[in-house]
Image (cartoon, rainbow over all chains, first blue to last red; front, side):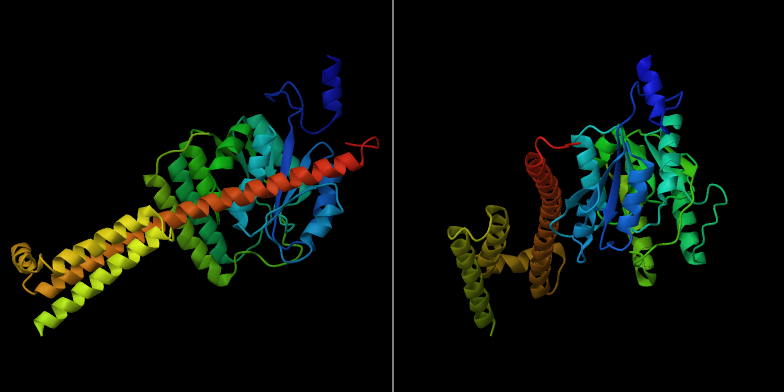
Length: 256
Length: 126
C-alpha cells in the first residue's frame, strides 16, 4: 500500500479505472523531418512536464541539424538512414515501444503543432475509456482551431466516412495527436501505412477489433517550418486517403 | 514480303531467347522473371516458326480477322503480366527496405546508448 501512495505521488496518470497495478510506461513518439527549430522547445517542455515519460525522436532523414539538436537533449534519438515518410517514422516508434514493452505510446508531431500540455489529456482519456486508441480531436468541442474551409471540409468528410465504417463517432480522423495501448502498439508495429497513415490506421485498428475513442484537445499553429501538406498536395492527400479507405475495405483484417 | 517479316520475327525471338538464357547463366536476373521472359520468347519463337500456319486458324477461330493484331494482343498481354509481376515485386522490396531501415535505426541507437553507457560506467547512469 506504500506503493500506492508512491504512485499517486508520481503524478498525473493514476486514475481509479486504470487497468495497471503500476504506473504505465509511456513512450512519446516524436516524428521529425527537418524540425531543428521547433524541437528543442518541444522536448524541453515534454521532459519538464512529464519526467516519467520516455521520449523518442525519430529523425526521418532530415537534411538540417535535427540530429545534433536532439543529441543535446534528454530525448532518445533514432535516426533513419533514409527518409521513410511520416508513417514509416511513426512505425519505427511503435516498433521500439513494442520491443521494449511500453504500455502506451503517444504520438506528438515534431513541428510544435501538438502542445505538450495536452499530452496528459489524451493519455488519461485512453486509460479512463479503456480504449486502444484515443485521438486528440480539434472538433469535438470548440477548441478555437482555425484552418482553411477546404481543409476542414476534407477532415469532416473523412471523419464522417470513418464514423460510418467504425460505427463510432469520429470527428478528427486526420489528427496525428493520439495515444495507443499496447495492443494497438503491437498492431501498428507491423501494419502501418507509409504516407498519410492516420485515417488508414483507424480502419486497420477497427478491423482488428480495437476500440477507438476521442478526446477534445487544443492544437496550436506550427512553430516553424511548413506543413507537409501544401495546396497541391491536399488533392493528393484526398485521393490517396480515399483510395486507401476503399482498399482497406477489400483487404483482410489484421490481427495484433 | 511476308517471308521477310516472318524471318525477322523468328530471328528477333531467337535473339531474345538467347539473351535471357545468357542473363540467367550470368545470374543477372532471378529465375522468377526469367521463366516469364523465356515463356514469352518461346511462344514468339514457336509462333514465328512451326506455329505460323496455325496462328491464322487460331486467330480465325477466336474471331480476329486481322492476324497481326492477334499477335500484338498476345504480346501486350504478356508484357502487362510482366509489369504486374514487377509491381508486386517492387512493393515487396519496398516493404522489406522499410523494415530494414527501421531496424537499422533502432539497432544503431541501441549501440550508441550502450557505448555511451560504458563510457559513463560508475558515474550517473539513468
